[in-house]
Amino acid sequence: MTPFRRAALLAWGFVTLLVGTTWLVTSARGVQARFETGARILHRVLSQRSEQQEAVLASLTALTRAGVADAALHEYAGAMRAQYPQIVGVQRCRPECVDLGPGGAALPTGPLSPDPGGLRWHPAAPTLYALTRGDVRVWVDARRLFREEDFTDLSSAFRLRRPGSGAVLAGQAARPADGPLPVLWVRKVLGDGGQPLVFEGEHPLRWAELPLGGVALFALLAALASGGWVRLAEGRERARAAAREAERALQAERARARIAFHAVSEALVVTDAGHRVRLANPAARALLGDALAEGRDLREVAHFRATLDQRPFEAGGFWGSNVPAELPEGITLVTGEGARLVEGALAPVRGEDGEGAGWVLVLRDVGPARARVVAALEASERRRHEHEQTLAHVTRLSTLGEMSAGLAHELNQPLTAIVSHGQAALRMLADPERDEARVQRSVEATVTQAKRAAGIIAHLRALVKRAPTQPRRVDVNQVLENVASLTAFDTDLAGVTLAVRPDSAPLIVWGDPVHLEQVLLNLVRNAVEATREAPGAEVCLEARRRGKDVRVEVRDTGPGLTETVRGRLFTPFTTTKPHGLGLGLSLSQTLVQGMGGDLRGEDGPGGGAVFTVTLPLAVGEAVHA
Ligand code: ADP
Image 1 (cartoon, rainbow, N blue to C red):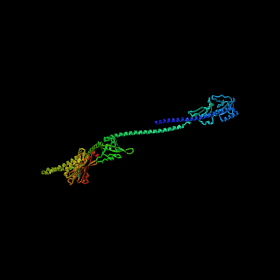
Image 2: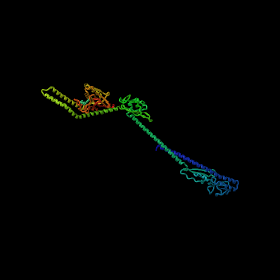
Image 3: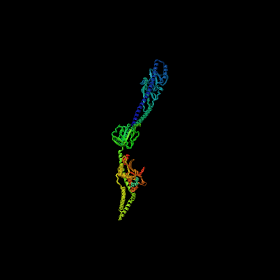
Image 4: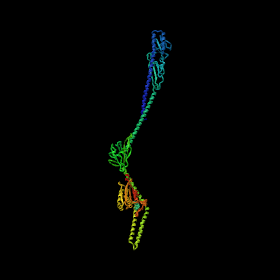
């Protein structure tokens, strides 16, 4: 049982008991008062009636003393008996008693002795007694002192008792008592001292006279009121408990939020509607420094700067945004303590009325993360490069078979020439009349052809051998400068203008600078050979950045690619030159592919040929892009 129910039950019991008892006692007193009033009235009536026979006695005595004749006395007595029904006889005793007036009950004629109350009782009829004065006796029937109308209140009983013995002379029987309820009593002697009859009233209290229904109704209403109060109080208690629980949950939630706010690695700053700092976590203080004091305008502490290739940062739009605003990628945070690459967002906070209550700025220093990403990418780039080198080596070996046929064909020509020139020289030396000059030409031709064969083999060795590479960060602009100085003599000699156009910004790629140099030298030499001695001949060597790649173009004003080589430029031993080996482009493509790039050759839009080397920017450079 809840404390509310216990308290309500106790209060209900107490109030019901108090009110019920008071009500019942008050009602019983009312019954008693009514009973006593009725008894008092009846007592007075009986007393008055008993005085009537006294008056009759007195008047008869006076008449006898006045010597009134018996006949007149008879008449008077008859009149009195008619008037007062309780008088059942009148006698005159001289000394024998004779009846005066009409005969009635049989009355004793001899002397009668009085009882202690002075009444003389009929020896045979117990309810008759005589009042005597002088020689006159007036007989009264005590039963007739009561009249029919005296018993209208049937709930009470009234009796007359004989003094002394207490025998009941007249009255009515009382109703039985109602269970444990008390019986009300009244006992009085009749008013006239000459007839000390005892008047008795009895009233057994009954349930019907008490307001039990009212008390029960009150108890019911009080129970209902208590029940209502209990429900109300328990409802309030439940509401209070729910409110306490909600408050506890809110506190726990706040504590969690506070811990998260302080523990989170992102910088968090909460401001009011005027951008004044209200809250900042340790990460924010570490990023923005000591200037981040509470109440300080955040816009004065945190300045953002875009990089050159970004749109300028619009501070007004960002700080006043009504919706969450992301910082542009790659933005720099400039504070009194330096500049950091950051990312983040500014979100407006709304109050309960929906109005702007402030902002939350979230910032993340991406510098360290970026360094880790770059290191990881460089490592993977290195692995990829090594893998590609291995792959290129395997590719070169696999093309060896294909090349062997061409090699055999290429070597066959100088070897056949060597053999025939050698045999001719031998034949001429065996001739005693030999021409020394012809012998010398044959030997010289043999040497020339042998050198050619050696040249072919040397090129082939360079191609097949897996040359050790030293990949590192290479500035392509620098390689262009090297190629320009290496080819300056040849271009001058050939009457060709070489235009070298490096990029204004560094173009850093990952690779072997010697290989790249070798490729560009080869392309420039081919271009110079194609434009040689033509009027206005020009070769242009240009490097530019294209997205995440570097593109180097070698353009010339020559005749362009011939039909026979266009489709198989990079197949070994493809050449249109009388003394060409047809290995330069094939070797160049292999080297470029070894650096993760590509080499293409095509006719230029305005004539001439265009060869393009494409290389990926080194990792850190590409992230900058
Ligand atoms: P080689 O120079 O020994 O012939 P390459 O592999 O370097 O071998 O060149 C193959 C062929 O591609 C050349 O013989 C030539 O026909 C063609 N070629 C190369 N560069 C140019 C150019 N700039 N203009 C026209 N044709 C070219």
